[in-house]
Length: 148
Image (cartoon, rainbow, N blue to C red; front, top):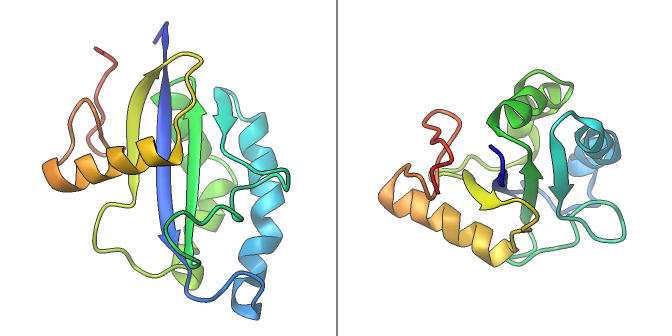
């Protein structure tokens, strides 16, 4: 949508600490998957430290990883998530991450050029968890257009 971009946030609770043997394969794939995202059509931005990823950021505890990114539109994000090598890693999620009973991914529209903070992203996830999908916080299964 002209004037708007799609923000996404997800979090995951690791089964073991980063740096452990149990997380080695996940960590070994981070750079490759991040490079794939960076080169994907429609990719705009992702939260990262100087290390090139966001694993050092632990605003919700030592075993909780966060991911925030911005995409041109929903189709671009869907292509990356479900039609690239990312899907192979996503299918293995249960090897590295605890099952989540609540929503762990949220999407929402932002003005082009804006970059969401982790706090804003978590607030959107909380909104989704408490009120269900809406134009302010939605999912791949129940997307909303950009009417903001």
